[in-house]
Length: 201
Image 1 (cartoon, one colour):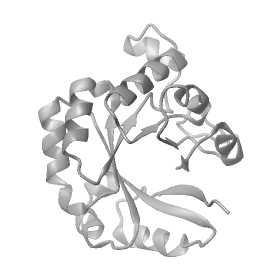
Image 2: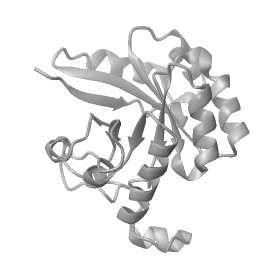
Image 3: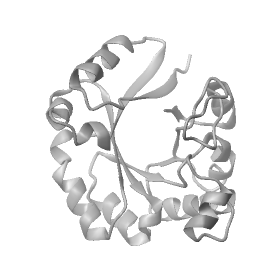
Image 4: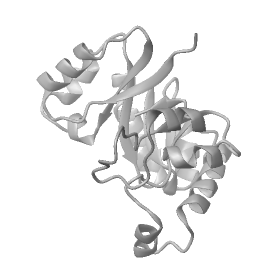
């Protein structure tokens, strides 16, 4: 039987709390990875903890968004952490995406589409004319052109992304109830898997 795949978000700046998260989420029925964001990676002891973590699927959620040279330099700088996945904003542009993929080695480069905290109104405020779904579709095409290994998108856009991107799809914005906090485009785990998500966060 195929195991459902879940990335556990280690959203803390406390190494002790992250150790506890990992300890309490061991599960033989699920394939589990651990996502480390900027909060933990920039905390005291965070980098050292990840460097010593063995036998786990690891996700460095750096959300790189910069010129090609800086994205490349950053990926090289964290190579010793041996992340299985590292994120880069698709909005960084084709050249940055292509350059990141070219030097990533065994690390999978994950393109981040429109953040789940944004909606059509938010995008208009930033200066985008298109709607979320149209922009995500274009981003997925660009990720495919750059030969990225995976895409992060809202579970609501998985079916759109799958039309043009055939590799792994990772979906944050997973909620069990109507309490969505700062997220705007969310679904339940069951809905996300039904839409075709490979990994839930």
